[in-house]
Image 1: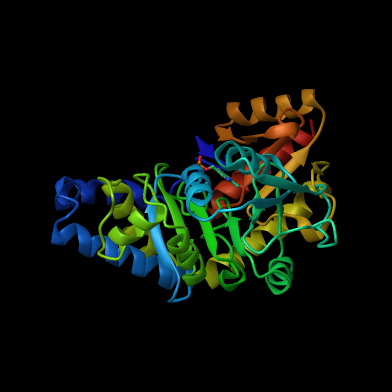
Image 2: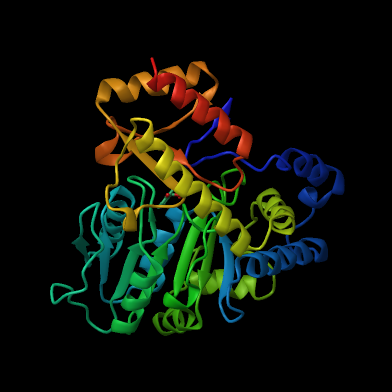
Amino acid sequence: MITFYPGPSKVYHEVGQYLQEAVESGIISANHRSAGFMQMLEHAITGLKTKLNVPDEYEVYFVSSATECWEIIAENLISEGSLHIYNGAFGEKWMEYTQKLTGSARSFEFQTNETPVLNADIQVSANDVICVTHNETSNGTALSSAFLSTLRANFDNIIAVDATSSMAGVMLPWQSADVWYGSVQKCFGLPAGMGVMIVSPKAVERALAIGNRSHYNSLLFIRDNFLKFQTPYTPNTLGIYLMDRVMDQVAPIEHIAQETRERAQDWYSFLPQNCYALLVENESVRSETVVAVQDSKERIAAIKKAAFQEGIVLGNGYGKDKETSFRIANFPAITKNEIKTLKEFLLSFTSK
Ligand SMILES: *Cc1c(COP(=O)(O)O)cnc(C)c1O
């Protein structure tokens, strides 16, 4: 089977070998306060920061998932309220989740084919956290770096970004936000089970000012441990090991991003040329890592079924477009040959 599911998604081919080596090396049986573990964690963080071009002054923590980051942000960075700017299911879930914890989450929704307009409707007070979804996995849209930089220039607030399905696949404008997070089972090409949280000095300062230390996953408690290259609880050692190995293996993000962009452009011309309608009409808001195709419920079901019979897994639609779309992950671990196979299938299906 080859998979184009946008998470969990295809892992890098080399992961099989790394798994074997993880067992043989003994590291995954080692105590997580041992020197061997701490060196590995330090190396994994350094590798990630180098390959993804993360500014030196930003800190990297491994947590359990992107979903956990919603909770960490709500409990440690939101003291008054939060404004959630979104156009799809993941942004909405983040808002709903935060609302349950804080009771002070507000929404600013925009349409699939729009870039959000920062006008007078956006009311934020100084301590509000602004929450945006960089890549809305549910509908295949993304926010541009220009938008994020305008947001940064216009507001002094802490800005938190869900980059779960774009981190490690595209270049992210780190300085335009204070918290970036994602999960490893998307563009990182790793097995599910870990989240990555990247925080600016300004976010650390806010967490210190709020001073919440009452949860096992309090940001400050996580940070205290990570500053010593330890973790608050027994971590996903295998996940950290695989992260370390994959960060050694991958090209610097500018190369990966270039390939992601070229492949995305290719999908966005191939699909409409062959009678597949794109879910996102406005070119400037299309995601480079998740490509969504729309059609009738019946045709979507038929395409997915026929693909499956050919050994190809397409991503189901998600949220309101669940039954009337399918999604194609354009993640770095997917090979040229796999893309070729999917294109051949799509060509043969359309000519039937
Ligand atoms: C996948 C995804 C999540 C959830 O990730 P988990 O690892 O399941 O917590 C959150 N936000 C976005 C945008 C996603 O694509």
